[in-house]
Image 1 (cartoon, rainbow, N blue to C red):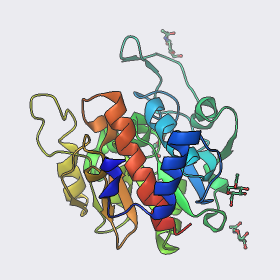
Image 2: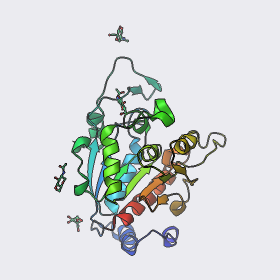
Image 3: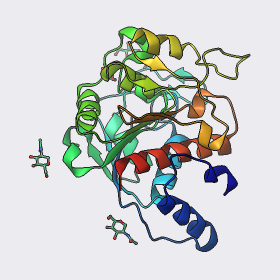
Length: 262
Ligand SMILES: *[C@@H]1O[C@H](CO)[C@@H](O)[C@H](O)[C@H]1NC(C)=O
Ligand SMILES: *[C@@H]1O[C@H](CO)[C@@H](O)[C@H](O)[C@H]1NC(C)=O
Ligand SMILES: *[C@@H]1O[C@H](CO)[C@@H](O)[C@H](O)[C@H]1NC(C)=O
Ligand SMILES: CC(=O)N[C@H]1CO[C@H](CO)[C@@H](O)[C@@H]1O
C-alpha cells in the first residue's frame, strides 16, 4: 500500500476498500458511482484498446462503481487485420456491434446516454477514438468529433461531472473543451518509447494545454485538471509493460471516482 499512501487524491474509503480487496477479495463497495464507459470498437488499430477497456472495468468494479457501456451506432472508418497490420478491403463493421464484444453484449447506443443518469464518464483509448469517435487519425488538429461524443463531453463538463480519458482519447477533450489541460505522456519520442509523442503538438494546436506525465509511477502518472474535472493518463501511448499501464489506469479510475464525490 505504500505507493498509495501519499496520493493526494486517494480517499480513505478507497484505501480501506483496496486493503479489504487485497485481504478478503471483498465484493462490497463504498463508491456506488454510476459510471458510463464509451467504447469505439474492438481492437487497438480500428477500435477500443481492449486491455485499456478491461483495466478500466476491473478498477471500476473494485472501486464499487456501477458501469454502463455505450458506443456510437456508426460504421468503422476501416477494418484492420491485426495480424497483418493492414486494412481489410471491402469489409465493413459497426462500432456499436464490435464494442458489444468487450461489453459482453451489454451495450447501449451512445445517442441514448443521458448525463442525468451517471456520475462520471470514461473513454478508453485505441485508434477507434481517433478514427471513429473523431477524425483525429486523418485530420490531426483539424479533426471533427462525432456529434454524440461531443454532446456527451459537453454535458458532463457542464454538469460538473468528472471525465476520464486515457491513451489517445484526451484529444477528444482537447478538441471539445476549450483550454482543457491533459496528458498523453511525453513530448519527445525518446527512441521509440513514446511513438505517438507528436500528438502533444496537435493538442497544443487545438488550444488545449499539455502536461508531461509518466506512465510508470503509480500515483504520479495521472493528470487531473481540477477546474474542468478532466483526468488523463498516457496508458499505451508509452511502450511499456502491461502491468504498469494497468496500474496507471487504476490511478485514473480512482481519481475519477474521487472527483465524482460518490
Ligand atoms: C454498490 O453500490 C450500488 C450503487 O449505489 C448499490 O446499488 C449496490 O447495492 C452496492 N453493492 C453493495 C454490495 O453494497
Ligand atoms: C472491393 O469492392 C470493389 C467495388 O465493389 C471491387 O471492384 C473489388 O474487386 C473488391 N475487392 C475485393 C478484394 O473484393
Ligand atoms: C435525462 O434524464 C432526466 C432524469 O431522468 C430526465 O428528466 C430528462 O428528460 C432526460 N433527458 C433526455 C434528453 O432524455
Ligand atoms: C466509416 C467511417 O469513416 N465512420 C466514421 C468514424 O468516425 C468519424 C468521426 O465521427 C466519422 O467521420 C466517420 O465517418
